[in-house]
Image (cartoon, rainbow, N blue to C red):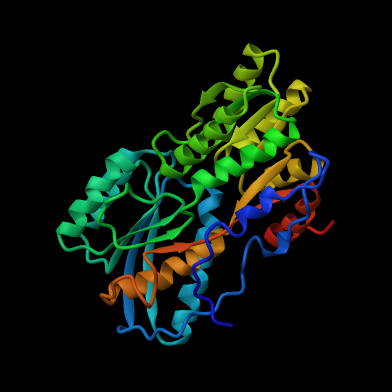
Length: 346
């Protein structure tokens, strides 16, 4: 099967809008398609026998391990064709745009065919990417954080619909709460486009409903421990809290830990496929999760990087934005995802 695709805009996301008449019962989604492991390289014939790429991302975290698995799959398939792809895949232990800046400056001194970036902070990093391009480097972005509009980066592979993800997760929460209640938002890393966009989508949805209110917005910097502490603080300050919207993979875990310890009944919606979060979903502590297809992000990133290295601009052979999917899963989908992602049986 040929696997190079640009998904139709928000197709998977729009399944969120269909619910049964009971606000607490969403329609069943096909969780088995949330992550696609069945990739085959497209028909493009690389011009070289060896490529060397540099990829940097926001923070060392299991989420990017899933992206790396897709990269390794593409790398293996290219090797079977006699094409060697080497790449550095590096990030700081804590989200830090200045650290990412230094990594990019260092990469510019090396002989990489392509420099790829999951942007830590678009205001800080986008001008650096422009400078790299002006100096003759081939630069792409990948994962969930693109550069600022107008940046000269060549292409983006990943999730360009983070605002919609945040908005649609929040619509789910609002319907579950029957459009009444007080909610908190855990954002993630300050300045990270994906986290900020999801939080903005959430806030815009809440603003539509007069009986909904955001009582707290906090940044946990991709730390489970900090997300837990922030949630504990929010719970202590607000005797009435009905929901928590989580904008990255770490904060649903931290929020769920705090909520379980409190014994309070709070609706949690959030992002991605952390193993503990999936167990909390299975147990009903988390209401739903938006699972991104990280594997496809990694696989397509390598395919696009090869074309960029060969001097091919976006167009017929690949688009400027290769869009990957987000699938919203619920309690009934948790066992399926645990089996698919972690091999857990029953």
